[in-house]
Length: 267
Image (cartoon, rainbow, N blue to C red; front, top):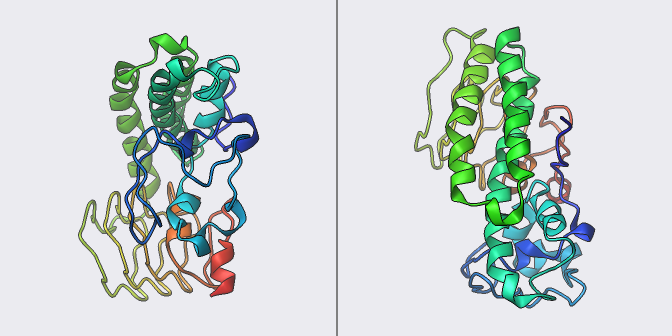
């Protein structure tokens, strides 16, 4: 079963991330916006008036947000009806978008787990679960709800954890730092190969020239982290949105397929 696209296609979406999400005025957002209210920068045709200057306009949080393709899949699920053309459907559309976003996040991690150097049986189990999660999102819109997510989440996490452990087993002395509070930590030149950094809070951490090969960076908070010269080749589950929240330079090495943020070049 082919995977749905896990890359956003804003032209095929009805601006769902600009309406169905809430945010508070902060360093990431210039204004308060409640759930269900369109962002004032959203046009009638669902384009953003400041898309090319989000960061400089006070909307850095939008730059880091990635629906992973859930927006266009949700829009397609309603056959062209949108929250704007059919306001009575708005809450249902927003609820389905929230479910689809979680399903697509699972698919993104499972897809990357399947590519790791792991045992054939585990890879087969992951591929079968990929098909299961994909099929869950293909249900009629009125059948998608929180139970859809809970029906997939436990197995998803177990398989990804198993793949991570197998891939990182090449480093028997790897550091276990899951959910570690490392705000502002000085980790320059640190040997973090194969480290478990799932959910670690690395806000403002200094990771210059650190070796992060094969480290599991799932959900690690890298806001303001300095990655100048860091070696992130083969880092596990590193997403582009995490890089967008950090700083780096030309000497930072990244996994294949991840683009260097344009803001790094500016810095």
